[in-house]
Length: 528
Image (cartoon, rainbow, N blue to C red):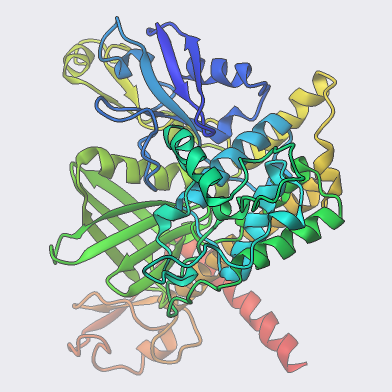
């Protein structure tokens, strides 16, 4: 069976696969055709549904197919090819990418998302810098004659650059190019790109109009588009030309630049709250954690603060620790059960990929069965019939990087030289990233230890550990010294008939002593 794979640059690749085998075979074949030896874990496949155009809707939330399941699940008809799209699933910084072919795919998708508005700049100055990097990466050399004073010439309606519609900023389609060619000549503009006749008195085309990147202003009032935006882009482009930046280096630095933007590598799922159906709620899943947006309120939830996530049909429930160290819940009803399952899968896989040292078996072994497989499993639990895996993540970010280095070294392939131009080495950046994750995990662990100490400390003297039980109420709230001085329970105010010795679990006693020792040492150090 043939599979047609849409690539981020708009082209299509065809590969022949066995529909009975896993979808991983299809991904490996198309990556092999693109010259990708390893690092295939960064990519995923998206099905193109019937009735959709060849250009897949680049929405923020993507329905990734599970590469561990058979490819035949996505075949509507054996006589027609399967339509899929290859996209970046896990965005990583450019200094972690080892192959030029992988970096080019990252760049092609980043370019498309920047020009389409799915990824926005942080401001107009940043937008001009990103546009200049795009021009340099696409091979456009700086030419002062191609720069106009304004974005567009004034029209009959006195339309300025600040009110220019987004549709006018996009590159025209191929069909419209031939129709507009004659208009360019009548208006006195040169034909696109490579015009050999430079002696004629013809006004040059402004290529910068096709590379406008708009910023996003979430918390502040939007700033109007500067009238000299084209000149700003030209100045940035001239700066890149002066340092003789190659297109490959421009691709690298563009990926490094967008890695710090809001929305980088984020998938946004939108629904309504279950308790208030009229309130819209969004959950953005990014490499750093979750962003919950409810009306005008926003909450950042790191992966370390997520306690549980569960999807049932269209409903999704998230339990996490808020900034006040209390437990909070977010319950949404999403457009379909497939979207709810995609949200649950996105949170689990991104957390494992970016935050964990390795993929645990509890993630890799999760599966569901269809009706036929469920009936057969009643008689044979080991049957593979109707078995569908929930997650297909095989390696974490660190494991992909280490495995790729070993493969390239074993084959005698030199790692891309572009990374040697970076201010920091790949390993240094990776160690820094892992150290930051470890520091966050240690902070959360210290917080848990403090809560345990508070829970087992006497509520009367706040010094000793609880070791008594009041009867008949059964409350454990005080140490022996304080309990002997109580006539009534400090919690329920019931009369105390007797006081018994209480034995806490050994784990709690050990943790409380350790945490108390650490707190005492910290206090002594501060006093000294």
